[in-house]
Image (cartoon, rainbow, N blue to C red; front, top):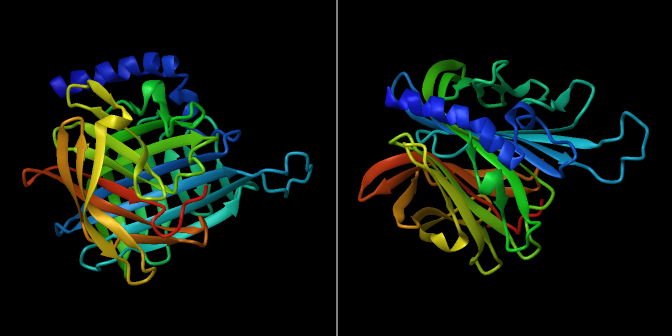
Length: 347
């Protein structure tokens, strides 16, 4: 009963929070075509009927082109969409991944305004008509995902009023909210076999005109669904020497109270490196994290969760399912993203 009352309270407060932040989900869940970069990012842990754990990642990106505004042709590419999808299966030992890219238009690829509805051909992420959750339909080359994600909490605004700062310069910000603790249910198909799955997921929606400073090479990011019902997002922007240029994050406790972290509150300490046999890149796949006294270790579901996205995003990065452990006890599950270790990232 207390969990239900807490959800109702958070849902009631959301319009007030959104108004103060100039974020209104009736409008901002959809595309912002004037912004340079935008993404909808879903990750999660799934379990098959046999009890096998799987991780999944589905990301749709939108990028505004430059130089075509004055071109009257309908064929001039003004918005480019691309998508990444991957499955993590410890029994396989490495990612199954796929990617797509297309110019927006002609009904073949779109990112709609007003609500989350983005697709490339038969890959899609769509918000329910009543706003309560999302559906994913994604037939990839080596697997297929069909998931329904149900909301259990109000969105989490990352940064004051949903404005997430990425550097000391005031203009280096993004609009950013998360939808943690999503209930996932659906199917995963592979090798001619379709398996029912259930689990939990996390959705990020972020858009910006300025994300990476010129001296930043990439970022480390983690989003965790806490076992007590809370949610935790942490990130740091790295410099060329591996140091932290900026850091931030949000922690919503099970009672609904939110802590926003300052750069000095967060420390990422690598514990173990894994070297990719394909790219030769070394990634810190295990970490000790201290967020203002909230301390835990991150351990990956499996080490080899490298994603080769050169065909669409021009980069290789590590994106994987992780567990958070405190004094040896699991306190959360989520996803870790490591960019800029192969080559400096350029958006």
